[in-house]
Length: 111
Image (cartoon, rainbow, N blue to C red; front, side, top):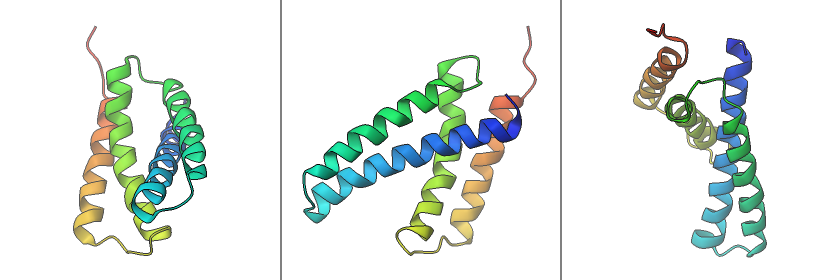
């Protein structure tokens, strides 16, 4: 799996997890209909399935890489859905996380 495909997979997993968690947030914190929990369950199931498709050779490495992408995706959600623009510290931190995720996924491994 190439770099763009791997990134797209992790980004799709992040979106699914964020949607699932946000649906629970709406139900719990904003008193929305319990039907939001159905969306949450479906989105979180999709998240788990997507993450299992990772090109990483071990689950823990996949989860670590995903964490960096999730952080960047969460800040995109903050801006695009919640209407709060990330500041320079948010963007710097997310950039560092994405660099770390790339190193974890594509760094050379010893035998």
